[in-house]
Length: 334
Image 1 (tube, rainbow, N blue to C red):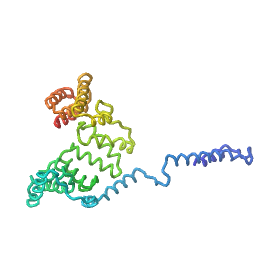
Image 2 (image 1 turned 45 degrees about the vertical axis):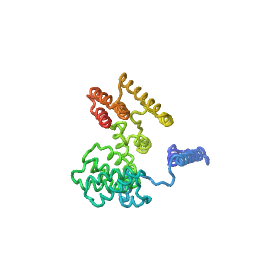
Image 3 (image 1 turned 135 degrees about the vertical axis):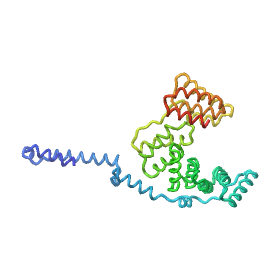
Image 4 (image 1 turned 120 degrees about the vertical axis):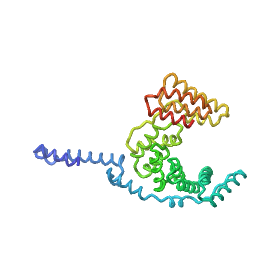
């Protein structure tokens, strides 16, 4: 294209060939060939030779096709390596879990038994058994099933399927959000579903909003922080997660803590907590940082102090409902 335009421009100048004789077209042709070679070289370096064009509409269509071709829950679970049910090592606990399984098998409509079985199988790593028990819990509760019930069902289903969010798990996630639009587990997994099926643009928005509205101690925060940079790149967005660079233990701190004696480790943690508390008292901070402090105090068992920080935060963030909710979530957890 560059060569063609150069030749046309040369013709438009008129009489160039007559003035230069046989050498007239040589310069523009050489320039055009050079430009063409440079363009090809640049594409070989930056482009993807042999890869077809993917306009936005085609990419969306392919993502929808990928989503539609997901395996069912049964297919995904069947694809996982077969493993026998794990039992506790302690003899008395093993006796209790075997008795619980037998009791639930005899009385499948016993809601309390199914709830106990779902929690214990999940704790033992028996993912398929936990998902089956939790599905029974939701079925027995019917219209009384809560967002938490559906979120737990989706969580156990995703784990049982080896991380794949199947259509059945997606239905459970949507049921959780229908009952509680702010349910963090459901929002996290729906963002993961978009990432798995080729929609990083939608996944990024879901995870960004969840990260920015969650207390630091929320279970999905570490997973989002670890991956959201790559997700932002895939979505074509420049993004810096909130709280990046704020006071808190880094990788080196965590590694050092692992080698410490318990009393030294606690002292280090308390030192970080006191540093954060002092900075917030003197300079103020974001709702996420106040939530981080309250969460840390809860972990240290200082619930009365955490309650006092929460009382103070209600005055500090009275005019900022979003920050106040972030701190409130941490306070409830603590």
